[in-house]
Image (cartoon, rainbow, N blue to C red; front, top):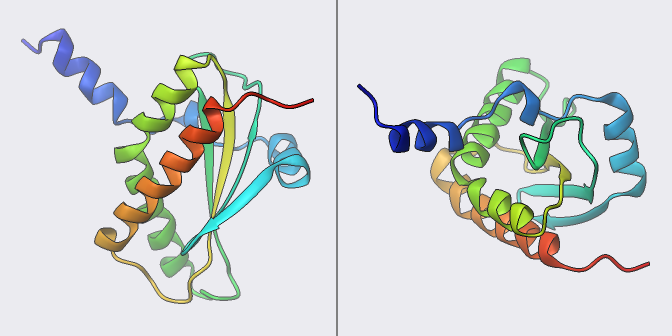
Length: 142
């Protein structure tokens, strides 16, 4: 029998359908009104949002340029690496948002011209998620 604490640990490392940013309206609003910063190799666009689900405080999307990577296989590989790195480290951001009872929409755009490896993305995502967590803790200005 699996203990409940093991079950919770498995849940925190998920990336379910409800956590994925898919709403065209939300994505358009995010690109129009969201704030952005770059930490190479990613450009991160984010904004506080009221999401359709109360279960997860963040919805995230990933994108790779078809111009820089003409083969879909390469684009899919990069997005898969980004999602996996995010999935393993997102708890920092989730905790910060839960502490302030906020929700956020985030979009990650890959900027580099070469396919990364998992080891180079991990420290970058940790910096990105720390910065997003600090933003989540800030008070909104009118």
